[in-house]
Image 1 (cartoon, rainbow, N blue to C red):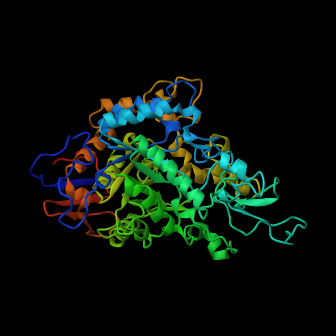
Image 2: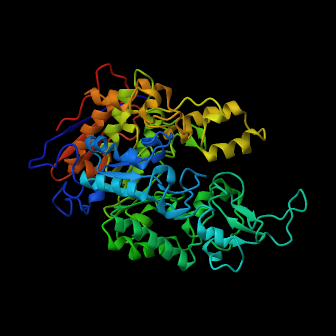
Image 3: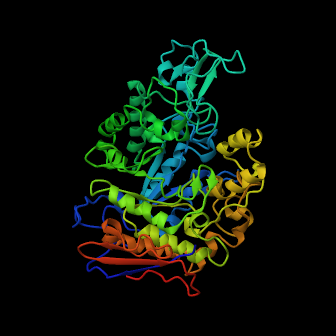
Length: 564
């Protein structure tokens, strides 16, 4: 479906911020909007996610790094974004591409040094932008010193930093003689969520990879360790955190067996531990309330109706969470499914109805865990890729909430043409191949066909900077993950040279949003929710009215640029 979207608006009087890089704290002078929202810099921001391994390699080793990001800060500033979200940069053995942290106060060797991080942060601040970093504290690496100590003996002081249980007393498997895990909790990366450790003959919990043991948040020492490391980065000047799988931190320590229905959606069970809100409120009191920060949670297992429990400003937990209802509308598990415009509009309608003036929304359709934006929600064919990407930009930047851009969205980068399991890097994909293909549950061809559309490795291919070898990402012999072969046509150098490019359209839409209070805070209404080919919406504030309309007709004329 290709949709052409236009925005009609009336210019506001008065002075606006700089068009290309508005400072997030200065875009609107008032503290409360006419419709009751409290104004905050993080509500008015446009966030750009950088996946460092794939952004820019500065030393030719084939892996993106912090100096590479620093070298492209002018590119990001000129785009107009004012917050950079840096995916994990911590020391890690990379079992899950940095989401298995070995040392929270050290930079991953492949990415550089702490001096490189400080230089990146300084460069961001000099350009009047802000930086938020990933906080991954549901689990650590099994190489973290806490876990090394924890697994060494049952009486080690760090034993209770993690969750250990004996196997079921006297239980054996149907095959005979094999002790069963403590319960039937599944891992998100296939198999059991329990791993038996031979040093003490007990099982540790890992909701994700075997090398990612879950922390025991019921231990106050663990919580204080987390709060201290948060302060370490905030005191350096970091402006907040994206919190990885944060609803999972509290566990039901009785670990009952999951029912067949619960096993269909274990994330819902895992996200509703008995102390989740208590611990988030304690985190807020101990850390966030003492700084002017932005917090956004990856809200795995949280329904839209439950969202205010975490983001309502009167509850003092997090500022925002990511609601995955939009990005999962074209997915059934790992399987691709067709979607309709009314279904997508219905999600936005529900979000608006569920969140009042005390709760703030995120606006996104892409990130490091999802396929490319224009491939998943637009039309990435040669004829329609550009107008389709412009449509999606118009929608994202005119919805109420804080928009998140993933690296390459502004170039309309597309999915990679995966052909073989060897093309993938993702641990989840590899584990799934062993579990489903090698056991004969599904053919390799069908498995790859689904992943070609849905795999998160689509988003992790290197950034396409120019038409030189490896898209200008690296000067090394080989990048860590293959570059999309379409880089000679789709790259930043080409986009910057073309005034009608997707990059320049993003730039204009971000500038328009920065000086349009109604696009940030305005009330939203879908004027025709059941129309399958058109999506007219309205947003109103005391100073401005905006009408947006879309149609599924492919039009030969170029997509219009936004005009104030």
